[in-house]
Length: 627
Image (cartoon, rainbow, N blue to C red; front, top):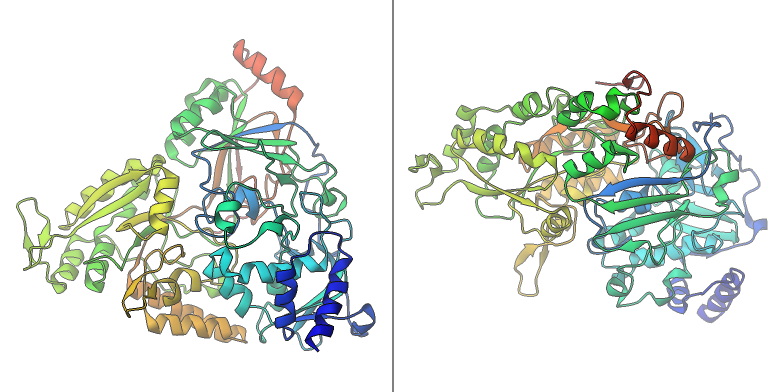
């Protein structure tokens, strides 16, 4: 039977016309319970197909193609790999997350399902299997056609130990029940269990480019380190597009397949996006004011309000825009490494919560424009526990908690000590962004509570590597959040906190998103139950329990939430009516803007000649405001 299955497998994949990894074929043969092959005649006859045609387009038909978008990055990413060590870096969104699609998408204004790689879909009557028809025109950015076989390869690749990515191994093993190919452009995916939002979760599956991975093996990490993985999106990084510590250039695919699709047309309009390395935000701001950058996030109040005094704004060339969105809020705050000495003590961590004055940072540094974050999981709608509140700054409460941990004596410098002479002194790590400028506020506030925060500022890539190796004490950080369903296994499960050595010792587990190292068996059990839940009411109840437990563990000190984004842009950058969509975290996420290169030439000439174009322009778009 295995020989026959393997022969059939070879026939099934021969049609694709790209490299077929024999190791992948053998893997499918060894897991016949998961990988299935059928014919179109085997499709259920009673399927009801949908195509999302009831949803409105959200891009602007006035958008035009062309031009080069000039942007900046504080540093090039440590790797171009999409998966594996150091791949989950801050540049990943530009390379992959905003530049790749699964079978289905979610409408950014309504949250309803719309097509992506699949042009239509259907669910089985029992809600356990989703069926998809692929767009035959869809291709990867390297020109290879996308077929059902690429979705098979996704499971082989992400489950492989060669990828060195435990999160993906777990996700692609536990969250999927099986996959069936009916022909090159028809497939079905079975769920591992009954659960709410089944279609949305199954429709997230993305293909992996088999031809690109023809050299995939034990040396994957090194061999693919500086190679851009082809995506299904409109942009790619060519061989000359990655100049380490100089620039990253994304080039648009000529005649991209999505240009003819209803929910993709009029989007992703620049032909080229250049990210030049500018290490200091002040230098990037100066480049914007000189017209060398086309737009710039100006989230910091000193830029937002300071722009009012700049010639580019006063003379009518530069527009300030504030867009309020409605998204799950990234958890900005301090992540406490509970695997470090002293920080493993819950009373110490509770004391640190009361000793860290983020409200003062919000009121002073951010001029009250930001809001206090209350917990790790905010903006998840019905899944957010509304009663949880961040612990308030209080020297009295902080010292009371420290006293429970045995820190009752003050040294000559006012820092608390225990009987063993250990001081409440911790390294507080920030990157070199503008945020480092409020380090002094946190340091001073903590000192009033008997705590020494020793400030450390690192270039972002260096900081990222340090945190992924779990070598930090306390770090300012935030994770992006892509779903309104809590996803806490990666950040808070014991599986990602520690690993056991052969001699039985536990050591911090590196290269995981559990950067607090929290190892709470009870919390892990709740997370496991949430992942296995089948009813929405049960998921909500377990979600509240997880969030309460995280609050009680005090491994995360909530910082602030940002109710939208602010940018300054030149007049040659055009935005649609309403400026952006409800779910946009930044202007590039959905690619709705476009450029007018001819206006760029005229505006820069007139600006440099001192001509006044018009009155200062500020745009406030708050139709999606929630706070």
